[in-house]
Image (cartoon, rainbow, N blue to C red; front, top):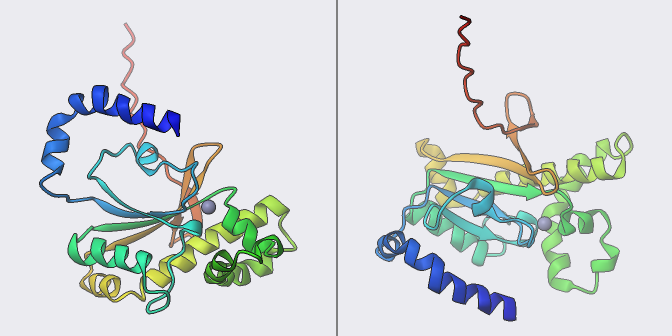
Length: 216
Ligand SMILES: [Zn+2]
């Protein structure tokens, strides 16, 4: 806790004064560019990952980046989605899973988590991902199968998103885009689901164009 309080003090003394204009503008309202739904895992920093500033991402952190289908589990996740999509009108929603996810491991090996009744109940929303990936279980090594379930889980949650009335209405209007990502914690790579290829492909930043080299 001591480190956290020291960090707060450093923010107030050094960081805030440098960005005072931004914070004072943000105090008047927000217009985030996307709703970013990701796991509560401490190793994910959505703003560092996307190099966004305060006010630019509306973030929903929830274990396993799970979005229960509407009207199941009406609560924090559904309210966050409704507010971001229905009130703030974000143009994009990103569901971002990640490698080495404890929840996805729990889906594959639920026994140790059984005493945790809330976690176990929540894991049920990821079971369709395991079922959908089951056909690949024999062909893939352990870590590869975990990744396959992680990817599939992102797709299941994107599909669940579409059952929420605020999301369905905006999809119907054609002014909302949904994106499925998986973040590789160790490598810093993000893959995104490409519906045309029906697979996750690395998201690459545009490469700078090479300047023509003039020979004397
Ligand atoms: Zn996780």
